[in-house]
Image 1 (spheres, helix red, strand yellow):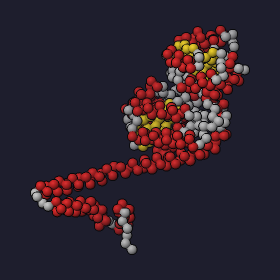
Image 2 (cartoon, one colour; image 1 turned 30 degrees about the horizontal axis):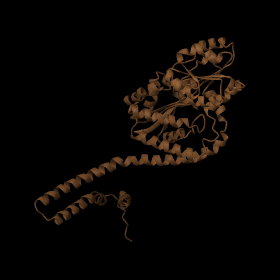
Image 3 (cartoon, one colour; image 1 turned 90 degrees about the vertical axis):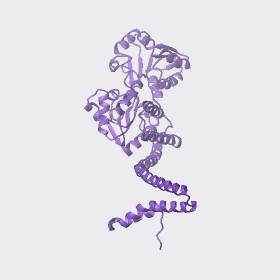
Image 4 (cartoon, helix red, strand yellow; image 1 turned 60 degrees about the vertical axis):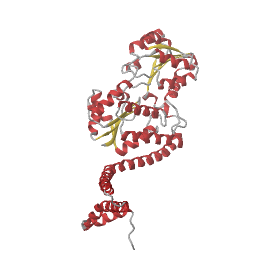
Length: 417
């Protein structure tokens, strides 16, 4: 079994492709069990965010694992193949370390990806697809990411996606304090955005969610109100700024709903940030007048603010990651000798038991303990040394030198002058 990682991200695939292979929380357990159950992998973890869908697995069939991704989403393989990157062994380890450290994110150094990766690991553990190899990989991944974030300035001068959304809104409206803000969803991304927008003291804050209780819990933090998604068609027109990020597989805001809201608003500008993958807002909404619609990919230019000051930290982070990769690969290579060590111990244990049984029989016969112990130690010594002595005595000239070196190293022998 080899360690293998593959997927697509914001660097290799547009949003229209990424949303077709995204996994929501409800489907994750089924997907993980399907991937392992069909023999494409022995162990598996799936990381699915707005910017990436990646599979980390232990497999003997990398091509089969890649094909599984398209098959699970009922897509032709050639539809996503041009956007897929695949990384075996050492490349997979390095990629996992870089992703967790924020070096592969749209927002360089952003911290949310580490929490998302930890959540992916928890989901794999719950699904029963997290084996020894992946457990060790992610244990080391989180350790390296912690070192990067504590020993470098990778997170300094960071412009988050939430801060970028506020900056874009301020380009449209002279003052957010005069605007009404609607958040659709109640997850971590919405919470982060709510914090940033609330700092601008908007006229009104409302949270819309499928579950009213969750919406109320979040809205109370910002002295806001809560509604259900069913109320959106009647309520949308009351808001100037809309930030949406749900796990819905279908759009929440359709073109028709937004058109009706614009008409009721008498064509006052409507600013929408869609942070969901798959998208919460139909793409056709962008064609409407008086609508300013931004997706996660549209925020990429804004979040580059402060990037130059973090480039020096990237070099430092890469050094930490390289050291971590070397250490992990050494551990993986050492795992290759485990079966031999286990076999060696089994042979020694059989010999020990055999001689122990013989010694106990001799004691039962009344033989002196000193004589029994001497016989036991001599027999064990002879048996343990028989195999290496036999190999040396029967070695061919071409292999004798290498065998002698190995024996000296194993038994820490010193050749007399």
